Length: 268
Image 1 (cartoon, rainbow, N blue to C red):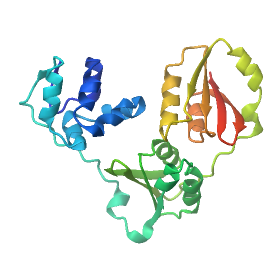
Image 2: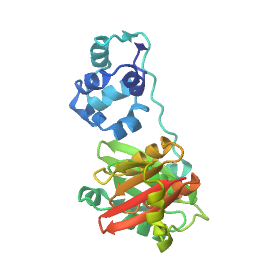
Image 3: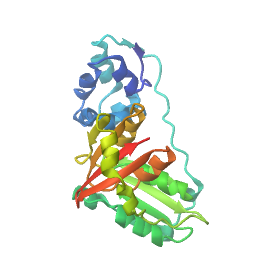
Image 4: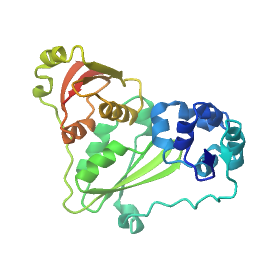
């Protein structure tokens, strides 16, 4: 495989089994690639040129490491100018008095779920106002949920642990209430569990940081064979996941074991 400054990290990792360790050895900042979920998210978007800036190294550092694995090196193709995400109109005209700030990094660091705080702010947001959430990752599940309700969003990554996401409430945008699961969510749990007794795949996302639980669950669902169910060990009811399951015509049951443990059965 011939690589240049614009080659995506995902393509390199797919090509050679030893490429991951070679890339991690270039910079300590690449240690996070050991996490398969972060690797899946970042590697497909990141070129060698972009990764060199993140890692504080050079494109040639990549070339030297990867050449030893048998990659052909193309040094003549220049790095593309990285496309800057086009700014939505509301960002270009945004004024300070329109912004409602919410920094959830402390809640995340303590292991708490900031969902209640976020939805409380969203509910009180006036038309034309913008909620700026500051956290450590791009809140993709929240973005998808609010955009379906008529909000416009924009994310700006300022550092490894500093991500700002803006949500603009357009006229007619719905007020978001936290979805409440009725007792029906646990209806027939034992019967359904017995039905899939010999056709269960199990994953445990309790130790994962957000938004990784949702990403891993959706990835597992995509690979779920026909006739099988997914059994999920979770810390809480995954509010953002449930609308996604409904849209995919998937059924589910929820069993609340304790305040910090929830089991889910997801099936077709």
